[in-house]
Image 1 (cartoon, helix red, strand yellow):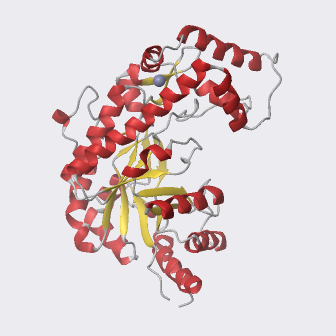
Image 2 (cartoon, protein in one colour):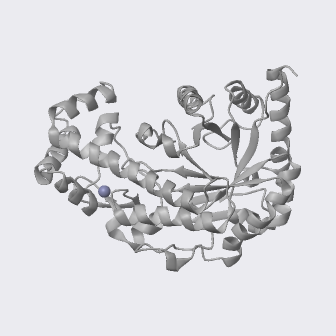
Image 3 (cartoon, rainbow, N blue to C red):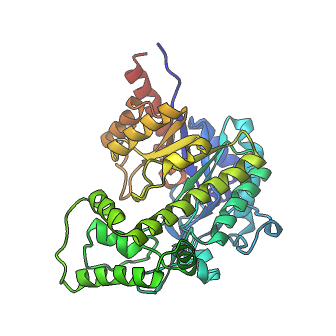
Length: 401
Ligand SMILES: [Zn+2]
């Protein structure tokens, strides 16, 4: 029995499309066998080397930006910080006009909380450590302004462009060191202590905790004291599993349990708010999440948002087998699709060659619905052009046709 083909998509940066020429880039993608692209809507700091985009061998960005022609007047307190090159921002408009005619689905790729430009321009939205230092690496979802911004952003995008899927990334409270540049961390914290160090005490978190009746000052001091004991070596390091410690603390410390519940709730609200705007603007568009775990291991309460989600994105099964298998199970039980991100080369993915082929095969065998290549324009053109033919060969072998 023949099976439906895996959709081949690639992450795409607006600057690469603009520099290559949007029409030319999309034509290449289509000729290379791709059926979709995941185009960046907003992004975080990055340094890229792009052999596939001849006019821009280097992309360096300090704080991130918004990459589509966002309509400023529609936003609340947080106004979109557009990337300063108009030709790059215009790539979204041109891609939306041309992609459907070339057989390419246009999907939107957003990062939610890893947008340091927001933290820099609106410092009260930045994360704050238990000890009180501002952490400008990203923003906190407890801030109503942050949640409102992301919801309006997705609605604005969906009103303007015929997007099929909006993939959300980074919708959970992030770890304390996410987004740091050139980090120098010499201590190895246990998962539990890394978690404690990542609890946010920004003004929004403090206010939301107080609203729930938490004695914030005393609770915060307990967190700081616990971490201090670890740093000073007066508390023995614990290698007990995180889940066990979490359950124990939830049962023993009412303030802690309430605080964690508050944090979970705002992330759910973030996703539900985005879904509402997306579906109001474009009822047939689908919302996607990393699941069940995000790329960095953080995890949303998926049960609460499943009704508004149509896609789960996972790291490629060869790298994250448990997460990918669980994503497939959840998707099968809920009528959802699964996309797998395939890095080709770099520090995360296998380089082009037998290992990359094995990784693709693992996705086909797990019945992944779509692969998202990272990243077409960052690969030498001869490799980028060979990826979908390889995928099709593997599919034919696995499916016996
Ligand atoms: Zn916070």
